[in-house]
Length: 136
Image (cartoon, rainbow, N blue to C red; front, side, top):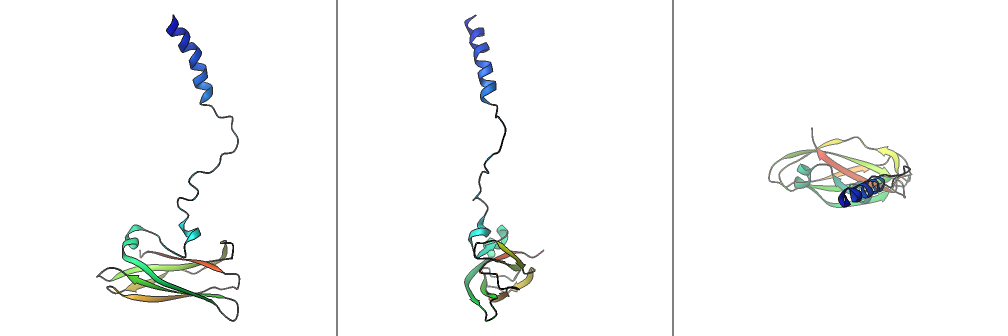
């Protein structure tokens, strides 16, 4: 009888303890996959992560106020690779200005390095993210 009584008393408490009253929830893992918000150069897949690196980035503001970015993209492998690269221009708070270059194909010879140049379309850009992905 003691067991039945304790089960009857504990069961409602377990059911009520698991219920949530509703309402809003806070997001979880908000900084886990936000590298594009913090880095100037990112790779979009693991194959490119092993093959490509950026050995240097230079930026300057042109006379007309547009941001110009030059990046040295280096092939780390002893074989020819083909990747796609683009640049997303952002304002000084890190928000996109709506100015994103189309992906362009970049062919890198074995252990080669190429300089890629991007220029923003407007004078609002102050930050940027260069993205590289595997060519499809």
